[in-house]
Image: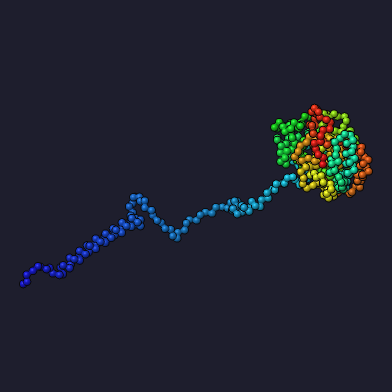
Length: 453
């Protein structure tokens, strides 16, 4: 028997080694599992349900095919979408500002007016008298004007040929029938109008313009305003309102459903069918109108008389010569009579201008300025205290009358008869209508202040 170390049988050694490897594998597997678990928790991919224990680890929820609940549809409203709103605004008929000066004087529809003013003036409106339609000769001749200037200079007046040049040449005009107020608008009537418009309406109540001046604006006015009412002394209530702007005159006439007369209408109403130089005829008579040519009044006593104080002239109208000069609708141009626009049917004056026409002369001017063809002018926003107005109106269903065969003022007639006219100087710086003594040194014939025509 050989001597050496003892070696166990091979089969026994191999069985023990297998168990060892099994234990090592389990240990490695458990370690890997723990490692994976800890790594997943660290990355937030694995969470442990610990019951009531809160966790700050966010949960990622992925929504796939599950639809959201349907949102209720609101009922439609009247608010249009932005595009529709823009279109709507663009289509609004926005009033276009009227350019200044206006190109025409609108004629109100018959029976229309301001209901408040009409109610306040009920029973106080001036009577309208009819003026027949037809054809007449408007304007005068250069010879008649020259004779008038010569007569004025001969009596010491301050007259120039240029004062009457805008009244020629004579031209034929045809008018529809119309109506004119018997006399000029009075203070009583006009202040009812202002009081109906309300306090402070005199400042901008006539188409956005001033209507007239009060004593708050000028010491030449006769109208007082106490922040509530407009008043004048009782003695003036039946005298023609003065110091009224053209806008103030137009606004009053339109408020009572009437209008200002055109220049052609005014002249036809003054001179009738026989082309009179004065409303009563062709010869001067200073007793028939209120002008500064009257010898029975001293300069400090001059002023407007109550309306209709003198005999009526053509068509039954009063004070178409003197008292106060009267606004008419037309714009003024010194060259208008030489234009074709001045002739024909119902001429309405130049389309634009800076001054409006005045007609009839006044208490502050000699009788020369009261001649029926004579023209003067003033800016429509100006207030002069020898300027007033009267209204006119259409007639229902106006018809153009046949030509009346009015004779032209011939050169011979104008030279012979106009030499007898009282030709005077320009209107003077106006005192108020009440008698006010002139300042020391004033003369009866001061320097003219209003350029005629």
